[in-house]
Amino acid sequence: VQLVESGGGLVQAGGSLRLSCAASGSIFPINVMGWYRQAPGNQRELVAIITRGGIPNYADSVKGRFTISRDNAKNTVHLQMNSLKPEDTAVYYCYIHVQGGGLWGQGTQVTVSS
Image (cartoon, rainbow, N blue to C red; front, side, top):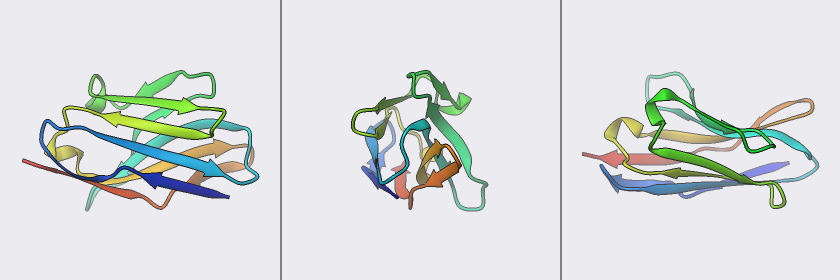
């Protein structure tokens, strides 16, 4: 079982990044897929999740700026992040929920400079 994340990096405020996560291994079907983030000194928090049926849920802080999507055939989830702010700086973790529990990716750093 493996979650491979990509797409993090450094961007100026107002810029955009797209995060991707690919799941592989004997974990299917995948119920919920999503993204959490953790900034230094803070607890890990929900950013966005999406059900297998494509229903998204967003944290209030990212509504209107971030869009989550998934491809069930490829077992991937993406997070399009627009209008990024310095307070979006954090390590972003991919998360999937399958029968038996949740699984986390290794995290990818997103840094937004002012």
